[in-house]
Image 1 (cartoon, one colour):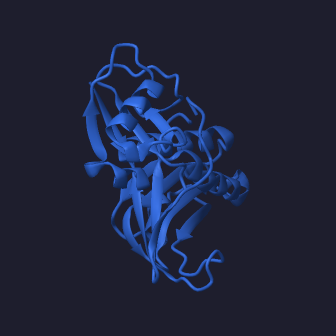
Image 2 (cartoon, helix red, strand yellow):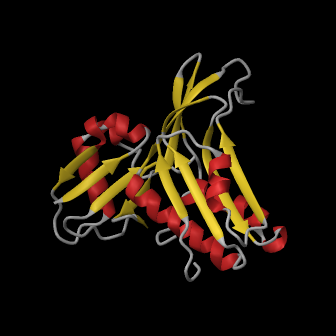
Image 3 (cartoon, helix red, strand yellow):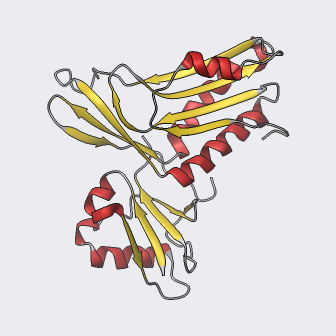
Length: 232
């Protein structure tokens, strides 16, 4: 028996977004997909294009599903020794000032903090105004991937002393920050600008977090295009 989780628009198609299902020993993800489509016809042709994860690792259709595994389906998402990154997924409001104070130490000479803001007006629809974004995360896997990003940053820019990746979930109003990526070092030439940009780009690639756009007209899930490779 395995546990199957669904996220974003897929969760809307499966009541509760979580089921358990029996599989034969040696079954692969593709066999699971076939069983799910038989049980939920509305999922047909949607799971093959979804990102798959088995026990918090990206998977392919030929990945074997162990007994008692946790398998997740979701759309593409819109190290250093001694490094203890600040990793948070929270429903609380974000504060760049508070984060900078938290990262500041006696050796800090520079901190670069990127803040992603909920944009009210987009170029895709000049008449629709975004009132809120609803963020959802596959939290167990998201924490692991955010730690992975922190260690990727540290391996590329070893002079960086502290790293923070904080993602807010739930309903967030237009004009409020939804994500903070920050890097601290002794001076500005240690790669903090490049590292912060790398952090947000990587977060949008491999961290299973999605958003639903709620405008004055309607609401819709925003789906990305990047498909991580197994083991990425």
